[in-house]
Image (tube, rainbow, N blue to C red; front, side, top):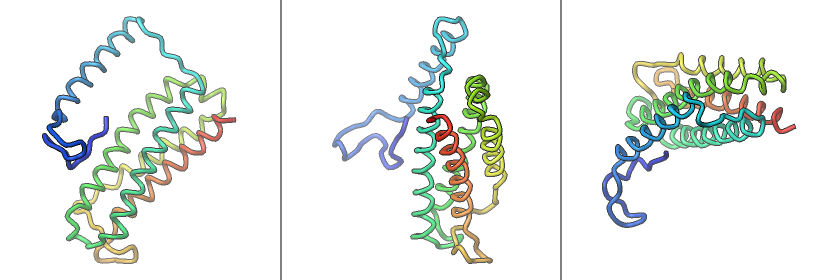
Length: 180
């Protein structure tokens, strides 16, 4: 579920009224609960194959690549230090994304345990989880988007971008092993 942060009840592309985001989320929660109920009752089968894990990892790596580009653009073109009013939005978006992916990837590690072990991915996967935990330790009180060489107003966006790229790099490495 991806929504444009600038579109609310009415949009220009395409022109006209839009379904409110909460409606989409409510429907998604119902669908997820239904899926989980079917999984719990063994009415569906989870297929933990290497090609499924490969697709999953590719999607997350692609998503993190987009986040990295957003952080880079904001960091390079709008570095107003503490006066960049959108820096905290970008920072906490990336933080929340990594937080969510940490939970999902930790669960995937268990779901695809046989694939991870058979392909020799255990150490890479543990490193991936450790890198995400490291990125989640960054919790400044005030988000600053200063210059990269600044010492009074640091650039938290570039720092978060560094961690996002580390996680993405690890995912690309896992993808390469799965693709062999």
